[in-house]
Image (cartoon, helix red, strand yellow):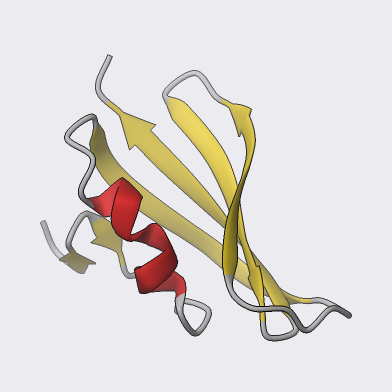
Amino acid sequence: MKHRINKVKREHSLIDGAIKALSPLINDEEVTSILPGPITKSRTFTKTELTFQYKTETGEKWLIKGHGAVQEIFIIRKK
């Protein structure tokens, strides 16, 4: 698995504190892959938090918010 560390694909960089916020998903046996999207700016400066958005055909979409940025995270789960 090239460019992967603990199920997390390293195509894009991660928001500060993202690995700590993602740790429950990294340790979940049902999760096969975690795909971070690009980071976009945000007007809010909060602590890093992970929020669920919606289910997809292959898994789920989550958002990591914090430190003036937002990042989409796609979670691929076993069927």
